[in-house]
Length: 159
Image (cartoon, rainbow, N blue to C red; front, side, top):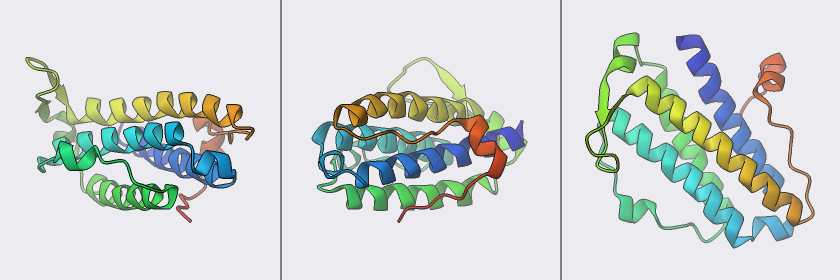
């Protein structure tokens, strides 16, 4: 499972970066408040589960602040990608089994592995929503299928 988990996380970052690049390629998309807020939500959710999994404090009030520009958002995505990649490189099977509790779902617990899967699927769902908005703005969303990514495993590019 560890290899598949690593693949899902790397694909998530590739897909996020590629989607943000598609936004940049269309002025209307790069400045669209709805798209910026939706992609910021993707980032904040990712950061929440990453912090929870690492037992690092999460300042929800600070995290809720939507960056003023797409470039600033892309920078935050890149920083979080680096943080998560470095952490995941050290994660063991026993780390994945550790139970997490969140104040947002009282009385429930989840494994770190389930948290990682949640954020991969959560990101995917919101990218699909964002793709609809991108089309409304006259742009063509990029192909982000996991199975297509597996062929060449293109690197994540935040530029």
